[in-house]
Length: 587
Image (cartoon, rainbow, N blue to C red; front, side, top):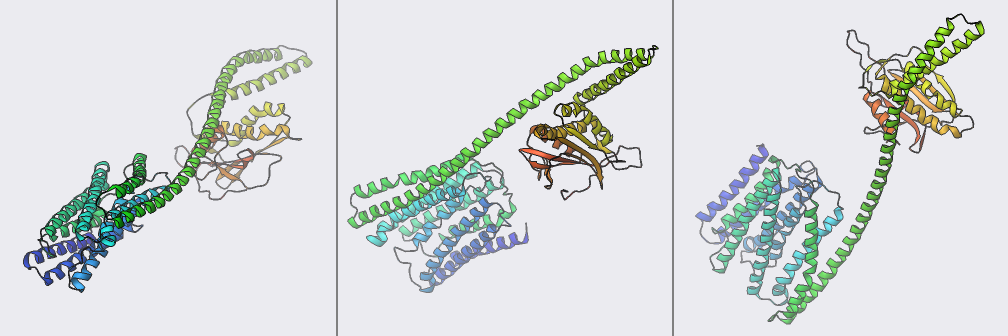
């Protein structure tokens, strides 16, 4: 327990003990009245001070809990204001509080922010509903409670003064308000979890003690047994201290939002607001048909009901407008999500086709490799069989073309083979030569010129050669694919070293000089345009490198592949990538 909690706890306990002491030791009179009022004022002031720190962002960084504590603090401030009005008559003017008392409306209203705080549902995670709609729902409920008080109580205070009817109506409305508050706390204490469940339970206990003590005090007033500072004030004082203790010990409880948002609760609050509006015609009908009500009271109630209907109707109209905009936004989001899903489905189908094609290529390569081996053997026999020079040269050409074809088939088999990644030192230039031999037939078919510039003495990189081959083939294919429409198509491939990185550049002869943009699946990278390109980015990121691109998602004109060089180790352990930090994107 922190020193702050101990200090506030001792202060609350001292004030409660002081109230008990004066109620038991002092007799009825002006001294007891003043002393008791001052103690209760000090207790409410301390309670308000206990709630206010919880409204700070450092205590409540999440919006919902902060709104909850702000409304709870507002409730305590209204309670303190009511006590100040009471003290004005009993302490300053030294006279009885008039009946009916105009400050009773503040006593009634001090529970309304508390009910609004519970309707915020601070124990739930933030949902995607428009906050303005929730505020309007809460405003409808608050206006309805104010309307209820003015409809039932105020006519007998301001229109047709009748203290007896005023007192009965006020007690009835105030009791209804407290019962609704207790029911709301009971539901939340049952449905919440963790620290919030404990907080709701403590508030339920404090509110139940306050409601029961108020009921007993009203009974004592009716039987002329109550006076300020009497024994009936002890439970009331204890309930205030208990409620203040909830705010003090809130920092000791785990109030992290432990439950996901429950839309059904928000819908129920909206339904309560709609029900409040639908109840207004019933109040107007009751004002017309209730017998024995004076005409001024009847006219006041009908006028009040009509004005409240207009105000709440305008709020509902505005709420429905906001709700319509929210629904339109959700429909647009759903449409875009459906289109993205269709695009992803098409990409997955294309990926499955490519995977099946790879399996087909692997099987066909095996079948082609057997006759090629026989052709190579026969050509070697022909070369060694003493043929004339001209025929021997033809046999040598046949053997050379067969060896070239066997190399191409071997590369296809290596590319199509599904093997686990083996991270070993790899010569980037060697992998790139293999990739260019594989893509050469495609380039020849579309009359594209290949310009291959390989850097000398490049350090090795730690990579899986098969995966790196796949990435190089795909990046070169992404550049070479759209080149068939150019007048003089050309694919430029270059390797070089830049500090602790080996760079592989793939670009067309028409590539612009705009800066490279980071491309990748991790946070901070632009989203790749295709599923296969996304797979390449993921492979490169697993190798400690990254892919940069020029162009847009509609088409890329250049790629840059950056791979960290292998770290030199003095022991016999496997080398690992250096993985230096790269903060800037080079052009």
